Amino acid sequence: MDHNPLWRLGAALIVLANVATLTAQTPAPLPNQAETPPIELESLLSAVTIVEDDLLAQEWTTVLARRSPTFRDMLRALLRTPHLRVTLLSKTDLRRTTGFAGRGTFVTHDGRVYGLLEFDRSRLDPVPQLRAIVHELAHAVEIACLPVPEETAELRRQLEERQGEYAAGFLNALETPFPNSVVRIVMAEHDARSDTGRLRALAETFGLKLPEVEAVADTSK
Image 1 (cartoon, helix red, strand yellow):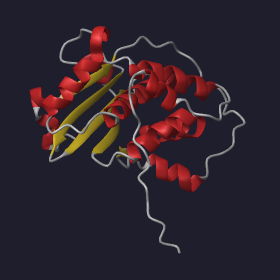
Image 2: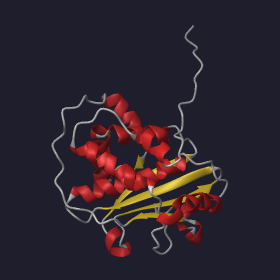
Image 3: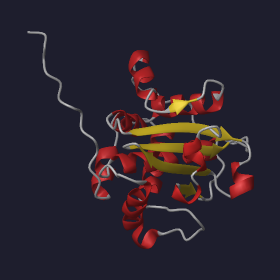
Image 4: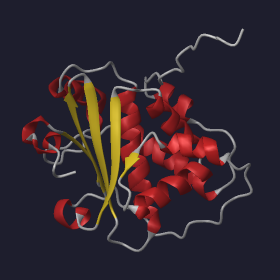
């Protein structure tokens, strides 16, 4: 992404970072759930752009989409937000250079919001990687629920209002309470059987309205 001038706007960028302490675990075996049809799964995964050679990002988003109905609902919410474009990228040095397990950077341009979501891949334990992906993607879902901002400064103000007393207090980054709650639910679904997602209930708890499916005229008659 370094060749894209949008990611070099300096102070205009909004950084949302995940610095939570993560406990090492081994992912549980895939529970006996009804499989998401491959065609539907492929469609959902198209909500997030991943470069072709980032196999780890591809693998973990697929695992999360298969195991967690709430994660699938997150992808659906992004698909229903055409003004928001999200790219996911794994990095070997993110924690070492920033102290963050995950980081989301957002900027507006020509009526769209672009998000670059990064997660650290330096540790062999997959659980911190999965949690960081969910956390940063939840930030994107939160932004999808907000009024469309005309400029990056407006988006920053919207997020600062949602920070409230939850502000993490680290330099040049914002944090809101919604993503950590989403992480707890998605990781619980990842480890145990669950057939019903809880994203809508979580969104309502935090005063968010998820994007709705646009009505399509029936032309079959």
